[in-house]
Image 1: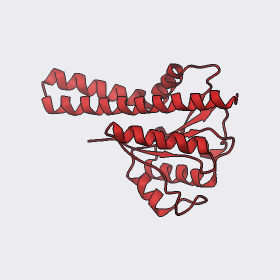
Image 2 (image 1 turned 45 degrees about the vertical axis):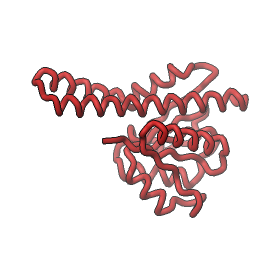
Image 3 (image 1 turned 180 degrees about the vertical axis):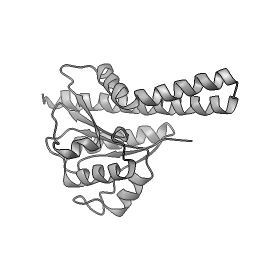
Image 4 (image 1 turned 90 degrees about the horizontal axis):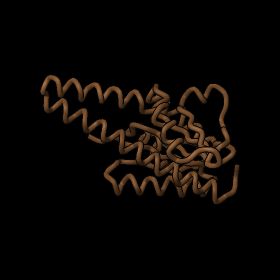
Length: 189
C-alpha cells in the first residue's frame, strides 16, 4: 500500500521545475511513487499522459514560486478536482503571493509560505492542520480501536496508513524548505 503524488510546476519557471524534479527524486529514493506532468507533448494544455498520471495519484502538489499560474497548471488543478472532488487532495503552496483568484481557489487547499515571517516548521504546521489533521485523527482512532479489540491486521493497516501520511508530510517539509531557500536566494518578498 502506498500513496502516490503528482508534483506539478509552471513550465515557465525554472525554479519550480527544479523543485518539482528534486521532490520527485526524493520521493523515488524513499519508496513513494510520484509523477511529474508530461511537458514534452504540450506546455500550453494538459496532455492525456498528464491526465493519466493525475488519475493514478492520491495527491497533487504545486509549489508556486511565480506571479502567475500557467494555463496548463490551471487545467491540471481543474482535472484533479474533477477526479478527487476533495480540495484537501490538491495542495498549492504559494511563495508569499497568491496568484489565483475566483472560484478555482475552491478546488484546492492554499498554503501561504512567507520565509521572512515564518519558519519551515510553522508552514508545515499549517499544512498539517489544513490538510492532514482529519487523516491523522482518523488513523489514530483506528489504531486505538484495533488495539482495544486486539485486531492485529487492522492495527497494522492503520499504523501503515498513518506512517504514509507522515511520509507525505516529510516530503512536503522538504519542498517547503526548498521553496523557502529559493525565495531567500531570489530576494523576493
